[in-house]
Image 1 (cartoon, rainbow, N blue to C red):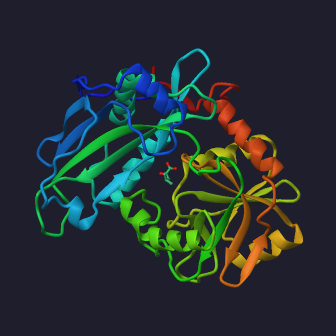
Image 2: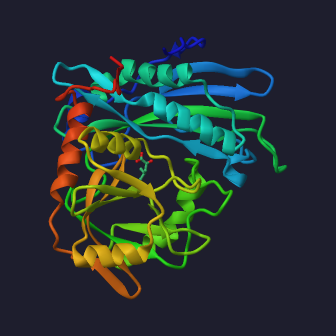
Length: 365
Ligand code: COI
C-alpha cells in the first residue's frame, strides 16, 4: 500500500503556456528530449528542515549560485520514466514505485537526501494534473518524465551538501534513436570503462553518463549507435551500454543478460522483461557473460538475437556488436522475432492494450 504524501503542493500556473496549435505541432513530431511541457515540479530540502516548499511552477531556467556544489562535485542523481496515454484518454505511469526506490538508492550512494516514495509519486501526479495535454496520443509516444535532485548548497568544501533541490520536468517523446526501432550497431569500448568496483555504477547519477560520452563519441565515429562497456576488473565481461541494458537471445528462445554486479544500472525495463519472459515460460539467465562468448555465439548462430532496453530505448534491436578487431552479427540483420514480440508484450501493458497481471500501471490522471 502506498503512503500518502505529507507535503502540500502549491500550484502557480504559467502565463506563457504554448497555444493548442503550437503544442499539437510539437506533439506531432516530438523527437526525444528536445521539447518540454509548460510546467515543472520543485521541492527543496535542507538538513534543518527536511523536504519543504513543494510546488508546481512554470517551466523555466533555474537560478543557481555559482558556488553551489552540484556545479563543482557533480552531486546529482536522476530518474527516467514515462506517462502513457490510454485509449480512454487517461494517463498512466509504468512502475513508478520502482523509480522511486531506485532514486532512493542513488540518493544514498551520492549522499543526497532520499525523497520518500509518496512524495515522488505525488510529484509526478502533480505535473500531469497541470500538463496532461502534453501527453501525446500518437502510437508509441509518451511524456518522458525526468525527476532529478541536485546539491544546491553554496559551499566549496568537499562534503555532502546540506541543501538540495528536487525537480521533475516532462518532455514529449517519440523513439530515442533517430531510426526508430530499426536495429542498431554497438561498439565495444576496450579502453574506457564505465564503473569500477565500489563506484557509482549502480546509481543513476550524471557522472556515470558524462564519463560515457567520450567512448560514446568513439562509437559514433565507428558508425555505431551505442557504446558497450566491459567490466573494469577483467575487461572481459559485458556490463551495459551508454544509456541502456543489454539482452541476448539464444536460438532455443532463452534469454541471457549481464547480472547485477553492483556496477550496472538496475533497469526497470530490464527487470520487467525478465518477468515477462519468465511469464512466457522462458529461461532467463542473469550471469557474467564474456565478450568472447558473444562473438562466437552471434557468429555461429547460438545467439540468435540481441537487444538494448531502457525507459528511453524501450526495446531496440541490435544487429551487430563490433570492436577494434572483430564484428559479431551483421549490419543488415533484421530485428529479432522474440525481441519484437517482447517489445509488443511490454508496450501493450504500458499503453493499456493488454491486461496488467503484475499491477505495474499507476493511474495519474
Ligand atoms: C532512460 O532510459 O530513462 C535513461 O535515463 C537513459 C538515457 C539514455 C535517456
